[in-house]
Image (cartoon, rainbow, N blue to C red; front, side):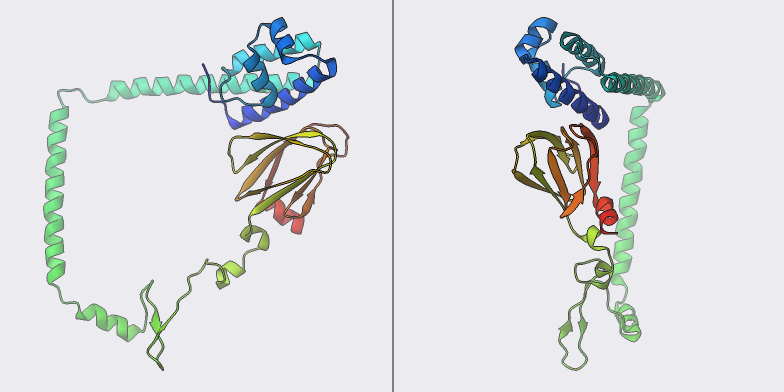
Length: 284
């Protein structure tokens, strides 16, 4: 049975999956060989490596799958062990939240009115609605018979123009265009920093063959493989999240500004968040 995992859990699993895949390829093993040794479904292993959590089971089962995978690879990695502890914490918090929701539902069910009282409540609600409708008709009838000259005279004396209406040119009598604050070209919009006004444009240039995972505006993450001398671009409205498989394998630019990944070579760089605050820091 598939389970929806939180965005934090997805990022951690993506980090682990990249490391497991790299270790498997170093040993020259195929996914089918790993599946035969661990007795784990081949599809689950593939999704763990690619970070696709859409059809994976609960986090508690995933931890067991990952540990079996590591045993076959004879892999001892402190970072993966730390990630597994984080997953255990997320799983425990999810279970506590689920238990709390069940308890709240039980309390709500206990406090619901009995079926005997429901007809009385419905009858009172109908009476209130009928009375409200009667009063609304009375108010509309009274306001429709009131003279409208006073409102017009007040507007003409004050010289104010209602919102959405164009003022007339005293010389020609033609309507003058109005401009609302916050629209492009208005004084309020021109005072905003350039980084806030523009969309995000991510450019990545491949230096070595590298795997990259990215999420645009909180959409499900996608995996991309960049080859040397290959250039790819994406656009976003608010946010871009990145995980780079090899720190020295790709150059990253946000709206033309260079993003420094890591000073260490061949290092996995997870959890990069690029947004308009990033642009403001780069411009300053």
